[in-house]
Length: 225
Image 1 (tube, rainbow, N blue to C red):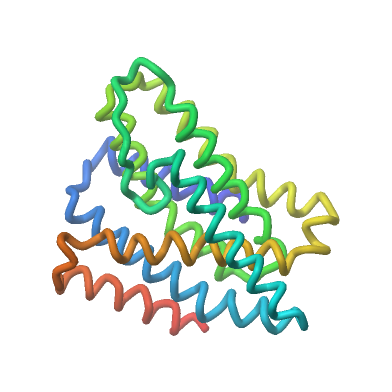
Image 2 (tube, rainbow, N blue to C red):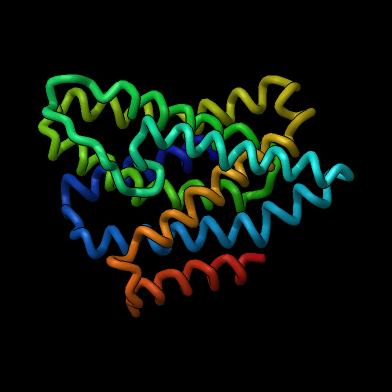
């Protein structure tokens, strides 16, 4: 079931682009909602869990910081794709290898701790991936990559999180250090979600629709506690 749910948002996001072609305004609102939901799940669910499972709070904090730092490094290659803003130019002649590798690493790592947590992490990833898949598919189409390239990119990107779940389940290492790995992912989520919330508004002006989307994401998380 976890595997299907993790592939589902990539399929939905890409199909929305090909069928509906959502406007930039809709995508920004989806990003704001997903960012708020991701941040709320991280603060209300994941953070309390990792600190309650470990006596060494400093160690947990270090892994959270490592997650933030590593995500910053990955974004230098992905150009912000994880938070819905791809600052990269391509003529469609070359496969975006660095973008592909960095996104696959990100997606794979997200799946690793799922077997050690409840469904909150799973749903946070699902909600987060839908607008990201929309932005990614739109980018690949606009840069005039062939449909084959777009399909290959999205296919393997969609498989990375389920692969992370599979590896996390099969190898005892990821169970033994499950709390630390979850702390690492918390750092990644904190970095991504805060950037999404800051970048989803134009010139940092108050936007009622964006505020409503953020509020909805927060309330939804609280109601699922």
